[in-house]
Image 1 (cartoon, rainbow, N blue to C red):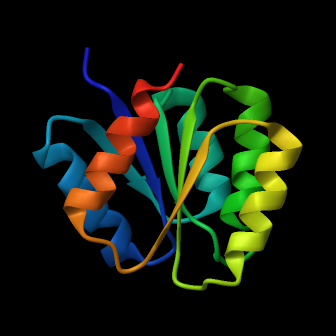
Image 2: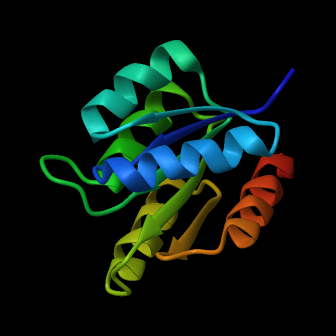
Length: 124
C-alpha cells in the first residue's frame, strides 16, 4: 500500500507542485488550499503524512496540526514556512503535543523534502 501525503497550502501553485512531486515519487497524494479543507480531506483520505504551510489565512497550519492530532494521532507532520520566525511557534507546538514534527523553510529542494518525509514516515 502506498504512503498517503496530504498537501495543504493556500498557494495553489505550491500545493499542486508538491502534490505532483510526491505522486512522481510513488506516493498517493492530494492537495487542498486551506486548513479547514485539510481537516475535512484528512478525515476521508487518511494521510500518513500531512505536509502543510504554517502561514495561511483564517486558520494556520499549526492550528490544523492541533486539530488533526486529536482526529489522527498517528499522522506525521511536515511543516513548511517562508518565515524563520515561525520556528518558535513550531517548538511550542511540539512541546504541547509531544509528537514528531519537522519544519522546512520555503523554497525547499524536492530531494530534501522527500528525504525528510521518508524519515518521518519511518519513525514509530
